[in-house]
Image (cartoon, rainbow, N blue to C red; front, side, top):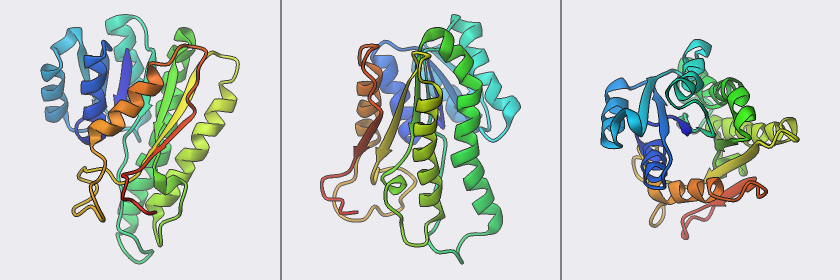
Length: 225
């Protein structure tokens, strides 16, 4: 059983489709109920996929994610903290309210997701996955989004150390430019596809229990930064 936040479209939806094709059952979490319900139905309904409407910045919402997995299937084996979004570069762009929402979603929301899921994952000796970014290894000019992804990079290592000895594996996935709604006009060459990132997630998940893939950085071949 794999739980995915930000599952209503883009990378999250691609991971859900790839995971179900690989034999996983999934809990799909996001704010957009109609998209979630449609994806859950596409993936086979309650026997394969459960939709949970949740805002990852709200603790009560996030706790419903592992609860849904446990109620339906009795266990939770992995979670992908994928919910997040970006902002225009430049410290005079975007509104303070937009910034606040992004920081809370990208950083606080990822931390709440881990906090909610770790007890069930400890029982299952499961897998924690966080969606980072190449921007979490390089600083984009005037990019507060980049700052949030640096925080997620640190969060993955902090969680790995915290969970040492529990049997839980921790993986950070760090894609470069992906063809999603994040970019209106992806710069320079062919971008990654959401399915490319999904294959990387499944690669880490499908390793034997004694193998922990701690970080995957992936870029389009033509991406320079």
